[in-house]
Image (cartoon, rainbow, N blue to C red; front, side, top):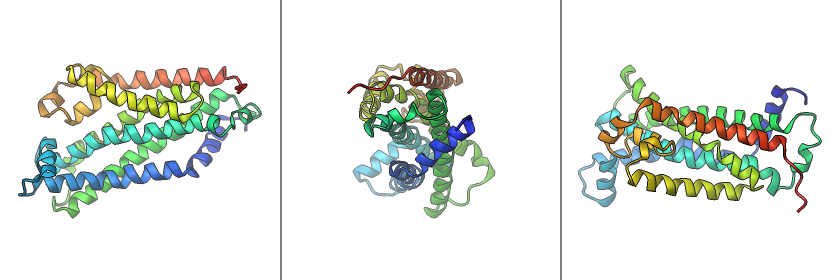
Length: 260
């Protein structure tokens, strides 16, 4: 193994065989759009049940636009949680399974291996979010929204972007999973991020907080709040991801075998 391509192939092989990756793929790729369709049915039904009222509160539009907005909301949260868990597992497993010593014997730098992990995760995330949107379109037809037309490309693309931004924001969790030498600390950091996001949003600063901006843009704070999120505020997700990737790569380069 002497090239970046071989490093990616090595990581992709481990990635494909992981049960956690398959589970998250099913949850985000299939279960999430099905849940969005269920919310749409509940929101547009004539009933006054609690779930129907809560689902109706999520609607920021009618028909396909409102439905795809729900898909985007769920993706902006679900992708962060699911992909974030995979990021924590992918980087933390080397320590919990006591395989980090084997990394020193490979004829490729550990930083290159870390970047290969990120490449595999992000490519998987792009395809997974696209799959989720495609399944959502099929589910929309099944629940009676009619056949989607070209005019829905913008709404569908926005929902996909919500998932992609969430995937980028999951990258810094690798820093915690690596430095703490295990995926559970990374998962703890993920939960803490969700709590902090709620607090920051409650104080009205969510648009400038990268972990809150995608959800607000999708409409989680209402249609009015979604319109206040600027492209610059969404762009902040990219430097956050790049910083997390860079710090992780440097830490893996300087990694030492634990004496514990």
